[in-house]
Picture 1 (tube, rainbow, N blue to C red):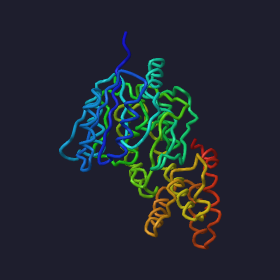
Picture 2: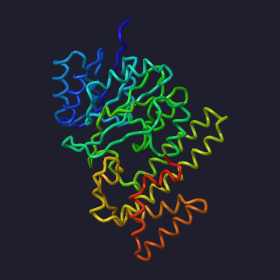
Picture 3: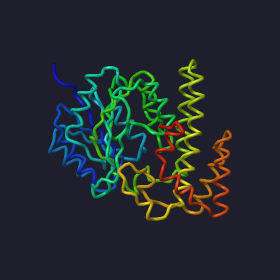
Picture 4: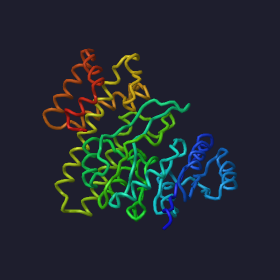
Length: 354
């Protein structure tokens, strides 16, 4: 019996230079058979010429050029619809991959037939390809689907990164991105839908590298992506409840977790605003994305963060924390806020957000 076909789909737009590297990584995979699909979202640079040349050099490559921009989520959905393999990887056009990643993922999925999606740990790299952070997830090799949703809602963090995951097509079925959904955290509902009927896999190796720079969709302050997070996850809660009315209690907990996570994330960002430049350039591999980007809020963004912090407070603890934050800012005694951000990992454990 032959090995299963894997479709590796690349939704791309105007990233000719990095796409070249991505194609080199994919063509160098030590697994076959693979089907490489490039879905070009109306690029205006040299992407088309690069891709047409690649199809001539490698018969495994298919190239589709969309005459108009169909949107990020629309392009991902096209990749899902056009995939041919039993397994599917959606690969972003500016990240890098270990040459064994496809083989390792296929082996894992063949060994664990209840798993619908598998991902590994990953590195974060800059434009030069230098490592600037890591993402290691202390999760089991196989997590029951609903437990994965519980864990992600509680922590605000998913062990699945879409550009580094492999999906079982039979588990994906007709699940797709919501085309009009905000970009931030738009993949979370996809994983949640899949996890309703399948388990989630994890390989404790860093098999891919996420390129993080100012052009990344994730390179925005927390205060700017809070609405994306709430809208995408609240909509999922609504949809889940319609499909599974017997999960009403669970969905109530998820909604509470969403608000709790957003409150503490905003509190963290406000504290980061008061860290001095020296302490904001920590070289620890496990520093947060917001430390890596090393930004400082504008006055308007800072006011927005405070307003949203107020909106997400509920219960005595968060109300007390909000009051303390406002008092420290008013008296210019902000050192405790900056100090707290240096211990955010311990704080997450205390708050039950691991």
